[in-house]
Length: 227
Image (cartoon, rainbow, N blue to C red; front, side, top):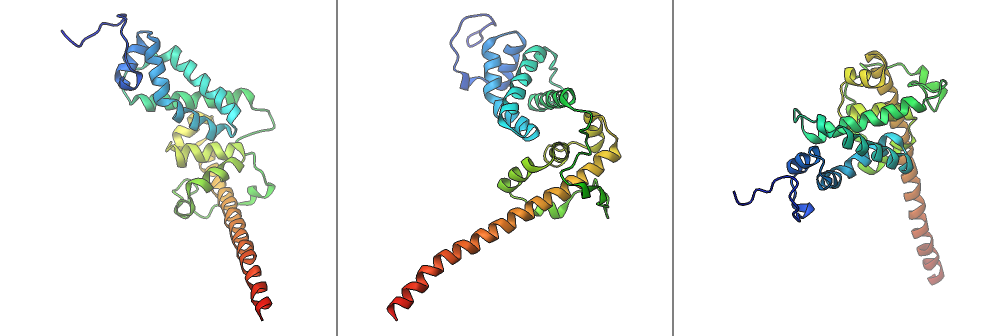
């Protein structure tokens, strides 16, 4: 039939015209163009996830490369039972967390904090419940900056639950902790994040005041000169 080209037939195909489903089919058959197309479609999101969890571009690049190496090795295990993006997302997350486990030092734990008084924080509500106040306080720029300032364990917990949408039982399995610990760490992460965001708001207010003074001062001198 016209229009059907068997795998292995040499044919020039524009990458941007190849569908994801076709790229997956080709990649499973070992075709280089299929892998290249999947990389084009998903590399940005994979890198973004790695950057959020790793906290720096150099580690994020290494992790993203490792994720696509895993894709190369395991693409044949994809059965289409979930969306390919979801399957690749979980594979990437596993790569990041395995790297974290290999690098973890004995003195660093999920409970590691930047301030000693975090342990004194006592949640007044279910620590695993949605944080409506925090949700309303965020914008994309501020949250990305604040996330990078969170201790690594807190950052991972917040991203997994509040950004990526994992449930506490899933997070417990991924991180090797209890559900209660997952909820507790999420609560502390949100408290710390609110503190960081308040600092951003205060810094912005100070900058606005200084900017206003800089504008008002020359105008005042000009009025005095005329008098």
